[in-house]
Length: 187
Image 1: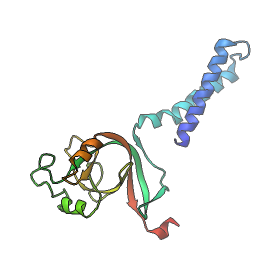
Image 2 (image 1 turned 60 degrees about the horizontal axis):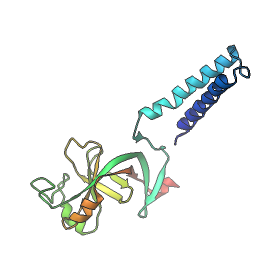
Image 3 (image 1 turned 90 degrees about the vertical axis):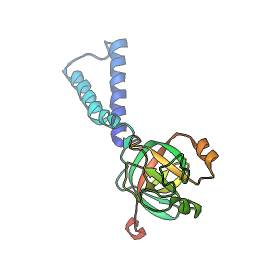
Image 4 (image 1 turned 135 degrees about the vertical axis):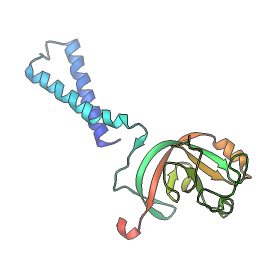
């Protein structure tokens, strides 16, 4: 929760308390110019601080100075979101295009997965971007999805892991867009 959301919530709670007092015990809280001004300030504060953060929905930017260590590497968190995540089996022509092992970056994704590398498909970031996906870890975006899935992540799994991909299904998970950083720059 951001400081803006917290300040907005405090303003809304203060407004609710004032309204409760006005309704239940009107003699304790006389409406005069000072009290009316206080109510207006709290209402404006709630609208300015809280409402814009709600309008952004799932797209919540991370603090620019946020860094994380994952799998022994340091990354700057460029963006932190909640997205739908699915899984697919690279190499299965029924789940891919007519070149099932060739990813959008022209690399053989089947061989990369066999070597233990973690890859995924996403349309909202450039190819080569590193993503951290809860329950999965860090994956490299090497493939694309159908253009109707603009905000989704699809985790690549080996062709033989069909049951694992089906069990993964469609989940709403935290996804961080990462940027690799030099360790010397973090400290």
